Length: 358
Image (cartoon, rainbow, N blue to C red; front, side):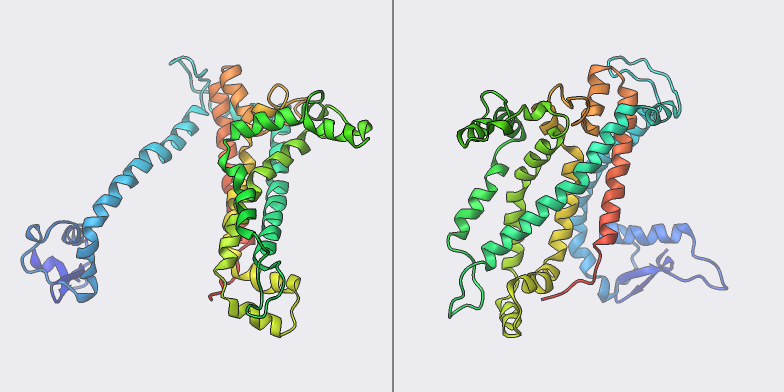
């Protein structure tokens, strides 16, 4: 048995090669794996180890702790995805244990559902516009806080006075729950008692007042504004931290070369924090594809008027709990998952560039 494992200086390096052209069998690899996982007293006596693999002993104990979260993740996160795909092929109502297999009928029905396509259109609108606006403003405010101050003799570039206070103000919406934000902004958009219309009347702009969330032409813009307002502060703090990690010497060299602040931002700052921007873009895109709580709380009949604010998660919720069509709703969820994965993959490809070290 000892000859079944190749070893150097007492550490296993792999299954021992066979003689006379024999191929290494699956059992040889299994034995090699046992020498790595099992305690030394259970491994072959004559196994020797290579010095390169001595660190395996250090991490063997940790690997068992990593195994438990991995199993829990597979059970609680990955397995529901497979269950969801199975239920999407049934006519399950969600309120009964009785259901039958219908194949791809739910997906075929989805193709002919105008409400579904209306929700997809609105979700894609949020997916495209919300990250552009949120990350763009987040980068702008973060750069102003980090490099928008007056030039000082001791520093080539400095932030504005009171930058820490501004970060707290920007970050404040993140402290509030989504439910509170939805209720507050719903009250602000109220056509009678809402402060937005009151301010317009105060400044003599009474002709601009309207029922903001009841107008199908601007209701989605109102939702988009609130969604961006929610997350701008988070990205201001995130990008400020990333910009703060850039060495001052790089900015000083750029200023000595005559670069202006816009040039410094696009040629120096943005490339150096691109990994952070890429991660933020994907995260914001996923948040935009969700948009369930804001739409469900703020808008008329959760998606109105006339499906003008209906997004795919809200459409899924209505089909599952209002219409009792959990199988069909699960099919919608599977499609939403595919759209999210495609978006993440596209953004990873489009934003991929050579990483700049500093």
